[in-house]
Length: 198
Length: 238
Image 1 (spheres, rainbow over the protein chains, first blue to last red):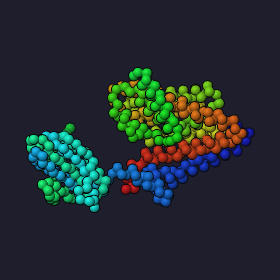
Image 2 (cartoon, rainbow over the protein chains, first blue to last red):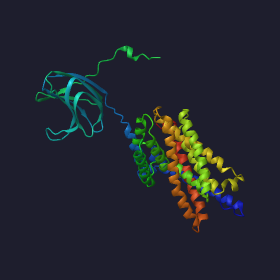
Image 3 (tube, each protein chain N blue to C red):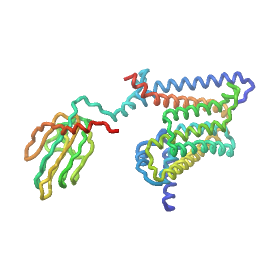
Image 4 (cartoon, each protein chain N blue to C red):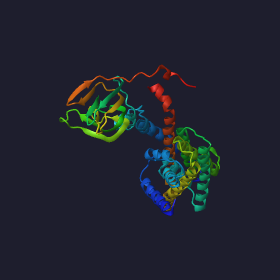
């Protein structure tokens, strides 16, 4: 707090300092903060400095997909000690939402075969034993992604799988052979569901 | 809670402060902490004290304002007085805001907090006195800005959908944590300022330092105002 004798001079100095602070803040805001935080880059400085990439990162929360939406529903029966695999074709970063239920405990493994991998190679993501599982999955690589189920009980079990994503192809592996499978959209719900309550 | 749990909390707070001293997480209660808070049902004194302290020590906007407030306070008595006034302000709106369901857009609150930094720095260089010929009561300003800081905290806590079970205990714990964090941050700031004041070029450097504070305050304000306006900007941009 400099209470100088020449207060007019001090006032000018204070206003100049305030003006500089404001101008410098505006320049920093527009040139660096806005590109990095919000992806707004009016001066092109975010692109030049690479700061724009910081804002792009956050957009990863959303992945718009132009491929057709593909809901799929399938049910199958597993005799004691029978196993089967159901898989979908997913590109890198493509997502899949799934839920499956079984009439009894089964052994399940969520896994994927990367493109170009040697025969029989698969990366495993989840092994479980139970009568249901659900979740969402994002493909870390392009390839075939899905489940292996095995019935280790003494009674036959029915498994129902529902999955949705933007995949275009599905495969079944069982009885020693691989077969292409046509996607089956879920059964349409009754019209009454669309009524708005309240 | 037994004594060992309390001791452990104290240790955690101290460790957190050490970590926080070297980094700036920004203002929000983010990531894992937010997930944890949402999962809490019933009183959780230790975690909320910790989160309050962490919030204060890692919240650069709070810290900048505190630096501005204590910049020219030479006597410990004055530091205690001003910090108590700030505490009074933010405790009222933090606890009252959450209990009363009072919430304001977080960006707008943070823009005001940015302006509070500018205000205090401008006052520190004698702006109000020499440019406008007025001397606003700093004590009132500190209480008012304390109210805004508390409202910002209340808004954030409410966004996390706190469980009503044990809410008052948790709020008071959080508020206590804010005080602890504030005192610890101030120990650093006051100690550094004390040394700095003894050096020869202090009065010239003080002017520059407060100009830098104004810069930071303006920058925070612009950053938060843009965040507030973003939904409207996006419509026209996209």
